[in-house]
Every structure is written in C-alpha cells, then in structure tokens.
Length: 339
Image (cartoon, rainbow, N blue to C red; front, side):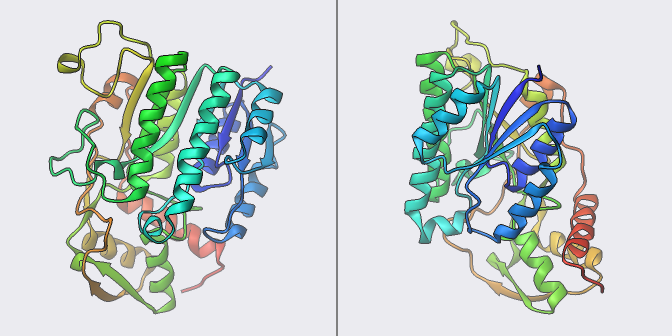
C-alpha cells in the first residue's frame, strides 16, 4: 500500500506543487482545502483539476477551523505523514482583517495538532514564514536567532505555530518540523504577491507601486526548490535530544522531537533589480509609482540555510532570472496573452 500524506492547503500555490511532486513519487495524497476567495478561486480550481487527474489524489473540501471534519479525515485515512500548508496568508491583509488569521492560523493549526495527537503520524511538517524574523537586523536570518519581535499579526501567528508545535512534540512525542519559507514565487503563484501583480500591471500598462522607494531586498525562492526541500525533509524525522542545552545546541531544536529550518535562496535581490529582470522577461517597461514603507513590511529578508545543507544536503539553486522567466511564460500561457 502506498504511504498516505495529508496535505492541507492542497489547492494553494505551494500545496499544489507539493502534491504534484509527491504523486509523481508514488504517494497517495489526501488534499484538504476550503477553496476560499482570498484570491481568485478559479486559479485554485484549475490547480485542483490537474491534481485530480491522478487516481492517487483524493480531495476533501473543508475548513480546518472545523475540528470534527479534520478529525474525521485523519480517522478515515490514518496518514503516515501530514504537511500543513493551509493558512491565511499575507502581511498587509492581516492589518485589515485580523480575525481570520486567528481563526485559520491559530485555531486551524490547533485542530491539525490535535488530529496528529489522536491519529499519530510519523512526521508533521508545517509552514512557518520568514516574517517571524520581524524587526531582526542581523543577516542572514538564522533559525538560532531570537524571533520575539514580529511586526505583523501574520508573523505573530506563525511564531505561535512554532510554539504550539513544540508543546505537542514535547507532551505527545509528535515529531514536528517547521519550515520558514522565504518569498516563494513561480508558476501557478498567488495573485496577491508582488511579482504576480507587477506582471499583470506591466502587461496591462498600469502603474506598479514600489514601496520604500525601492529600497528593499527579498530572498526570492522558486517554488520547485521549496517543494524539493519539503520532500527531502519528510523522512528526516526530528529526534529528541535529552542532553539539549540552548547555549550549545541552539534554539532551532530541542529536548523534544522538534526542528525549525529556513528554506530560502540565500541570495537577496534588490527590489529595483527584481523589477528590471521582470521587465526584461515580459519585454515591456514598468510604470512605477514610489511609495513609503507599508506597515508590517520589513526592509530585507535573507535566509541562512546552513543547517538545511548540513542535514539533508540540499540548497535551492534556481536563479531569479530563470525563475521569473518560467513564471512569465506560465502567466502568458495561462491568461492567453500575446505581447
């Protein structure tokens, strides 16, 4: 029998790509998604249609806020693994709509942890975010850095997820790995992300808003690198370290079966350079409107991935030029655009 993996947020950007990869590797994937309208549901349904062509993919439309429904899925399938990617995303949206972040990212994650406790899995991998680094000034961002100064509610919920996972790893022996994603981009991406909206506006001849007057850097990470990292971590199951000493072992592992990793490209790109590469790939210049820094934003993200390289021998390798070219080609094909 094929090993079963529950993937929450399976119709989302990363969830779709991960589901595709795992199906190709021969796993049975049980996908969960509520198909909400935070962005165009058609995109989610089109992703889902591709996954449903594979007989090893089973989909359940449900909201992870519903504890009974989540428990029912875990009871029915008794998965060997769970990858929790469902969440309310977006730093700026969390300022306008804080309630949904508590419901989805806190209550929803609690329901997944409870399901993993009641129907034990070999390994729970869950999405954290580079946003947890908040006001940190020391770069590159290391998983051994303190992350107690978030600058958005979204970041605070992701830090909370890491703390909740540690408690469940400690009390119930559930091996958990949190992955801090750094600005993920690529085909089938999220329309609320800057690279997507920039592409749309440049093609349509509309202005793009460049915040902090372009004085920002992001560690853009291509989606194939992200899902390859998750796949390699599946069977790299955290082990408890009974001799754990924070002063010697760092804070990204524990006396519990618990681990935190960054997955980033390890190469920050200046926003102006990013825009110029995008213009080149699209074949059209952007109309730029410069704005001040937005609340909740950070100046720079930069991932230290040394522990990822050490533990699983993996490092993201897709250049921003190659990644943006693949995205732009997909965008033109998906939206049937000719320039």
